[in-house]
Length: 587
Image (tube, rainbow, N blue to C red; front, side, top):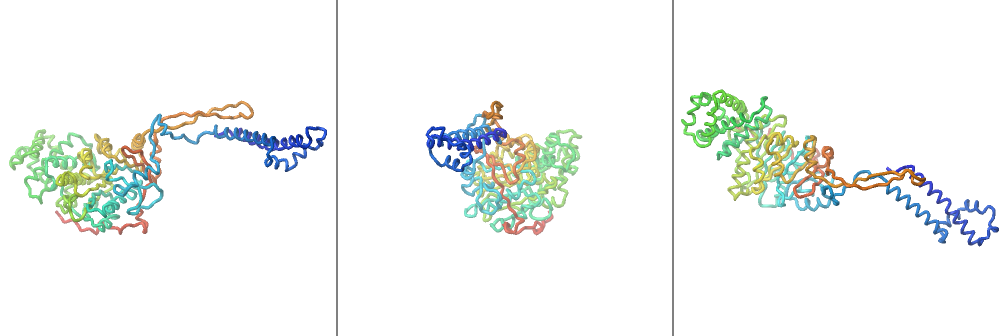
């Protein structure tokens, strides 16, 4: 802040100059022009009259003569000096960003016009937000969209702590936008949506039906309504068999239904045994009986529990291939170890003793082979999940894994590219558990026209589920969105990912010498590196804004656009009720 004493002193001197110079100008002018340098002609009250006369000051600023010009020059020089001193020595209120100088970093946020250029070209792609604050979402509105046909993939990673408008500001607007995007095109986009609390289904189902969608629901909340899907029906290779088994076991270990700590050996052993029994069921039982419930029955039978019968169990039924190899691996263990594996797997499969789970997984009413394929009507599948716990995460994991594997098989039938692009909006990824080989699939989804949006509350959630490959998953997604950050780890990652910029910092020194120089300041300019946003600034991101970070682009600050369903004028469609769906038939 500029020295107040110097400012006051300068103003006082200016007032004195404005009072004295007109008088001096008047005195010298009359002495030269009227009295012709003759001192004897000058009256005694000459100076006093000059001071008290208004014409003295009026003539000083209105008449052009050498003396007045000299006075103006003196005042002008002093004003320039004073203004220069005030402006030149004032402290900057904050650093100045100099990314264009770039000595310590060139990161910056995109300008308003750059955002317009890159994200307002068309409305084909993920809806991101807006350049303007306070907007309500409406279908087809002008806004920022990540283009499908651009150079970047359509794989979006969304991070948002609870209350950051993930559902109303991002998920629902995109569900509404996808049918709108394809309304004038021959092809349509299919949708797969994981839905905590069933809120998303209730708010969007009627709109999707009005747009011609066949809407299906897998209800893992009530275990009573909607459709059913048996993952075992869609296992067509040994690889898929192992993925289903491993995904189920790892999801149980991640969930809260068990109190013991997981161990890699036991997880792998239980996964192999589960894979062997699923293979047995696939070969021996008719399709209607190929269920996880049947696997549980076999697991608790004497053929498995009794070591003598177990040694020849698979041979008696002429089971071969991968299933036999996995069974033999199980038999290699000592009796005590085998007993622990059996108890562990039986405990993990106890979910299939629940009537609702047996009904949902005991038959198939959704033909997931239609998703991504050529058909008369597009498909929207809602997978309803409890948000208060992860009890059913293993079964949800098996369901999602089965659907992903089927999408790849469907794509193969159309030359490795889905006929209908399929959008996966995976809300609350933590409740799905660890999807096997997700990092590998992300490397090939773009060419198959599978477009996933992976939604997490924080990076520690992802790191917990995908300990060995969470950074691979991040690197596979060209689009990262930060809707709100509460934890230090995500804030630090976001800050580092935004990059460094160059800033100009002012240095100040004071000189206390002289009357006019009292408190005078001088400045120096220095350049330093700084994070575009520090971790604490990332955590303090305005609730109405989001950070968009994309490969090969400068990051952007966008405004969220909420779908305000609680306002009657903003409603797109009437609410649906899960209880209005038909009840699942008993398996």
